[in-house]
Image 1 (cartoon, rainbow, N blue to C red):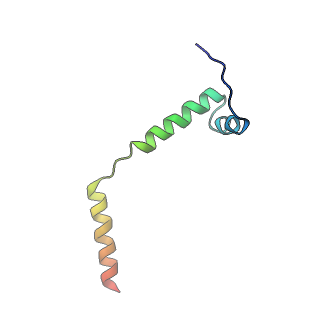
Image 2: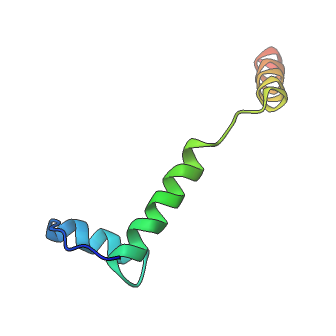
Image 3: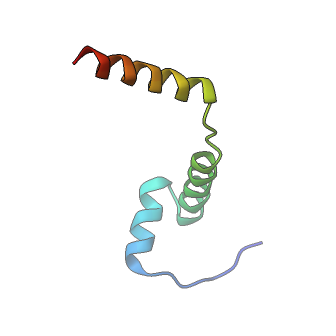
Length: 60
């Protein structure tokens, strides 16, 4: 099913920069946004960064 919608010209340019068509560009942008929002922080990674920073601070 398709639908006709109005979008601003700059939005069309942005969508086309992500895909061959406006629809494909919108789908790609949605996929990227969902992926970016799902990023979970690993507590062990955070601990390692804090530990490294504390070690660097103690050197000075």
